Amino acid sequence: MIKMSPPARSLIFGVVFFLFLSIFSFSTTNAHSCTEGFLSEAKRRNLVVTFCKRYQESNGVEIAMKLKEKPRRLDIMVGAMLEEGTGWLAWGLNPGPEARMVGTQALIGIKNKSNLLWDTYNITTYTKFGCQLLPSPIDLNISNFNFSYIDYLQYHVIKATIVLDPLKYDVSRLNHVWQVGVDVDAVGKEPKMHAKALRNYDSTETINLMTGKGRGNRVHTSNLIRQVHGVLNIIGWGTLLPIGVLIARNFREYPLPCSGWKSYHISCQSVGYIVGSAGWAVGIWLGKASKYYSFPKHGIFGICIFTFATLQMLFLKLKPDDESKCRDYRNMFHHVLGYSLLVVSCINIVKGLRIMYLDENYWVPAYFGVAGCLAFIFLVFEIVSWFNFLCDKFQLRVLCDKDTANDKANSKKVSRDDGKVQPSDTPKNN
Image 1: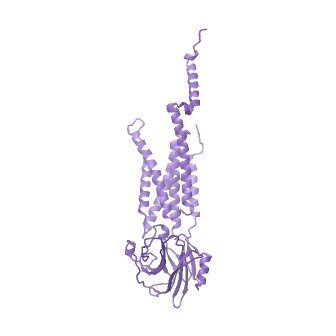
Image 2: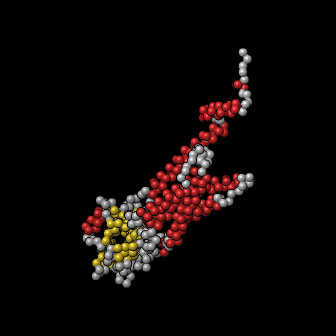
Image 3: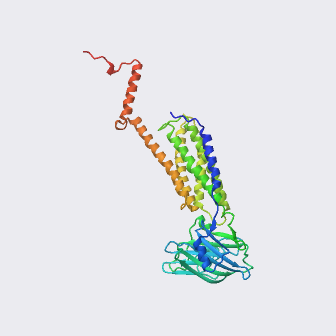
């Protein structure tokens, strides 16, 4: 019998507290200085830049701008990698009160299979609803507009000169929007819908051309809050709950019986529920605060997870007596709901990581590493448990001759101690 002296509850709370504190060490920077190659190319094209930024977490787009204050002339160069056979790159200004897609006066360069095209587009509400986006006049005074490919950088680049209307565009608070997409129509004049990930929805900023500083929308810059949401859910739903299931499954009888398994199971599940619920609450807030986009499937899965977990916690109090006929049904429902919760949690965590578009970094590999370790441990315990179960149930000679021989020897010893004469002990007549 395995006996663990340290209280599981204190240990789990300590680990979770440490991991919770580590959340705030993540970097939340979205914009970085642009690469040396892009900056050199901008200077080669006579852009003595006011500022130059690379938006690493927003499709990796790089933007260089040069402002001449008196004529209010803005020279821009926007570059990004279009790695597929077709694609498009867009940049524009929004004269409205905030940086957003609808209302943007856009310059779009399109890469099709045969050549490069570029034109102006007015992004309206109909575009958001899926209507065709075709070339149209825009309310910007544009010159020197072109779209080209820089071979040594492997960048497609939009370059243009814009004269800003002082009544519509404030250089100290300029709303600009950028975007990258893959699909275009057969003719090549219509860019199709971009991907629906946060890296696409985050492609907006309000900049001060006088200082070169920019800020995103309030929700768009909440990378730390998104990471808190993700880490809490991974710890709560994706780690502690599966550990609690492992404890209940493998430390009750097979393969490692532990007298305190129940307290450890309840502690693990309770802490997992608290941490996961906190992450779920942060996710609800993020969903409410996102005015222009939503992820309904991810939200529905999250509600299901919270509901399942809450029902599981209620089962701690709603326990029929051992002799009650309802106890078997309650246990069956508890087990089915628990395993369903694990499956839905795993799916939704991966969904959330892909929405944040962090699979190219360390998040998805790290989570798959944690989930893979837990799955491997569960599989090993299952093999050992079934081996022991089959030995005890069917006394399989091939699998456990040694155990069977030991059982017979112990049985014989007990019988002797009881004073019973065994057939093998009967004296033989010579």
